[in-house]
Image (cartoon, rainbow, N blue to C red):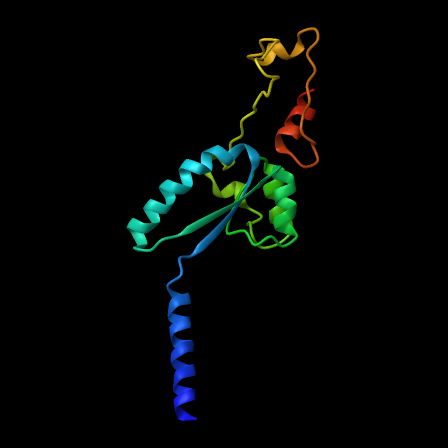
Amino acid sequence: MNKLFAASLLAAGLAFASAAQTAPTLLNVSYDVMRDFYKDYNSAFQKHWKAEKNEDVTVQMSFGGSSKQARSVIDGLPADVITMNMATDINALADNGELVSKDWVSRLPNNSAPFTSATVFIVRKGNPKALKDWPDLIKDGVEVIVPNPKTSGNGRYTYLSA
């Protein structure tokens, strides 16, 4: 019986040591436009982490509309890092939990916001209407489709600017 107990204890110890050496995993919940940015940034971050802490780190990503992502985190998605593109989404996180301090904007220089956003024009194959810039969007025959302003920061920007 003692041999069985010792073997079990040894197996548990090996399993624990193996688990303790597993690379930490971070979940970054972000908005769709940042997908390409994080491909490069995560790689650079992992190299920096390895140099600083002498251990590997895994970065997992979740992408979606900014407001939808904020709602997912509020509803329990276990984010380690949150990158939103609208102050209203950061405010929603601050108002619905302890993830973000309610005074987040005053903690930054000039009450600035820690996010950026880009708008992308998606055109039909070959860009038959030669759309290149904002004024092109009001040409005859051009129709604009925007994301849902309830779930997308860029959708909200578009709705508010119309």
